[in-house]
Amino acid sequence: MKRVALTLVAVVALVGACFAASHKLAATVRQSSVQGSWYWFQTCSQKTEMGIEVLLDGRSVYRSVFPICKTSKPRQEPPQKLLAFRFKGGRYFEEREIQTHTTDSIEGNIWQAQSEPDALLLGVSFDDGKQILLNTIHIAEIDKPSTSEVDRGIVVKTFTVRQKK
Image (cartoon, rainbow, N blue to C red; front, side, top):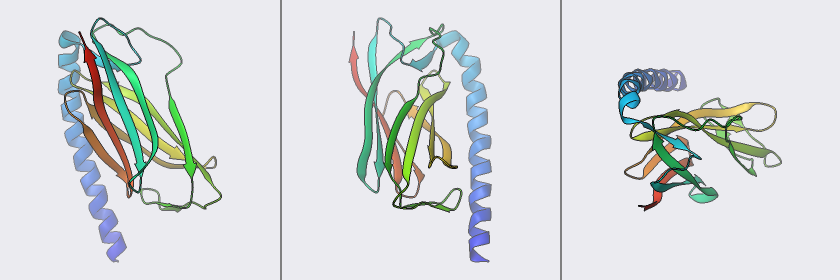
């Protein structure tokens, strides 16, 4: 019964967070056509890079740096860019209540899900080759470091690493 109550509280909190995020996103979409938005793997005159790090129980399992650019007309490059990495299984993913085995290889994927005038929304997912273990969003703010615990013990950090004029 306690587990059901905790799950219900988590669902209500998630719905509330999604509702708040959707209102912010709608306001951002209206502003972005005038101000421009941030896109990853784009180059422009203002040389800016973003760093990303994924930590598993406090230990870094992935780290990368990529160019970002604020523009109202992004250069389209199909297919969508994807950052991919792997780590050893043996952990419990709470969102879907799935226990992985130490023999499993977990693949992590990160992609740009949305652009905003002051942030990148990055999709973050993990799978074991048989099923999706986690699928969520990390808000990567441009002007300050951002940290999200996307599941117990799994932390995504983003930060602007360099701006050249």
